[in-house]
Image 1 (cartoon, rainbow, N blue to C red):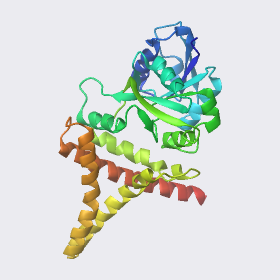
Image 2 (tube, rainbow, N blue to C red; image 1 turned 90 degrees about the horizontal axis):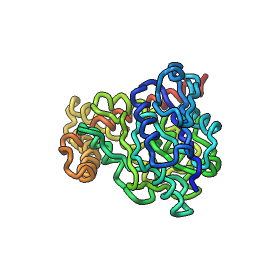
Image 3 (cartoon, one colour; image 1 turned 180 degrees about the vertical axis):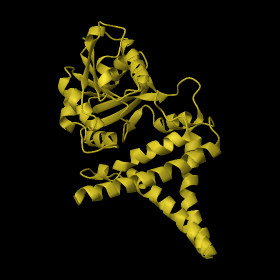
Image 4 (cartoon, one colour; image 1 turned 180 degrees about the horizontal axis):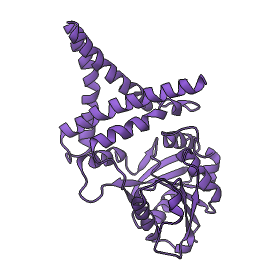
Length: 320
C-alpha cells in the first residue's frame, strides 16, 4: 500500500528553479494521488505565477512574512502536511524519478533509520566548483552519516515530531542542528539509489565567497543546546586559525620578524594543503589541484568573516 508523502518546500524568488523542482516531483514513479506539494513562499507573486502544468496534483502555496527563517517556513509547512512521510526540499533541486520510492524503501529497510537523503550529482556541463561541491557532498555514500544537508531530507512524521521541528532561531546551519538532534533517535542514511541535482549550486568563486559569509553567520549559535562531536570542532576553529595565522605572518614580515613569519605562514597554509589534498582525492582528478586549493583559500576566509559577523550580531542583540 502506498502512503501519502508531503513535500514541503520553502521558497523565495527564483521561479525558474522552483518550476524545475516541482517538475521533478510531478514526474515521480509514484501514484499521483499519494503525494502532496506544499510551497511556503516569501514572494507574494508565487500565488499568481503558473508553476505546475499538472492540475491533478495536490498542490498549494502558502505565503509567509519575509523576515521568517527557513526553519520557520519548514515548520509552518509541516503544520499543513497530511502525509505519513515528510519530504523537505530546497526550491532549487531536481530529483530523479525514483526519489520517493527509493526514500521510502531505504527508510523502511532498517527500523533504526530516522532520516534518509539522496546522492547529489552534477548537472549538464558543470563548472569546476560544482564538481567540488558534489564531491564534498558524496564523501560518504551508501552508509550511515553524522549529518545530512537540508536540500533533500525524507523522514516520517513521527521523527519530525520527536525532534521538535527545525530550529527557528538559526538563520543558517539549521540542517546541522536538526539532523544532529535527529541522530539521537536513530541513524541518518545517505543513499545512491536515488539522486538529485542542486540547481542553485555555486558556479563561480565570487558568488561562493558571498554565500559562505552568509552561511557562516550562525556557526556559533548552532552549537548552543546540542552536543558537539569532535569531527565538527575543526569547522569552527580552522577558518579563524588560518586567517589569523596568515595575518600575523604578514605583520611579522613587515616588522622584520622573519622566523616568526615563516612559522605563522606554515601554521596557516598547512591546513589548507591537508584539506586540499583530501578533496583532490575525493574529486577523482575531475578538477585540478590548484582549483581545489583556490576553493579552500576562498572558503575559509569567508567562513571566518561570517562567523565573526554572526558573533558581533549576537553580542549586539544581547546588549539591546
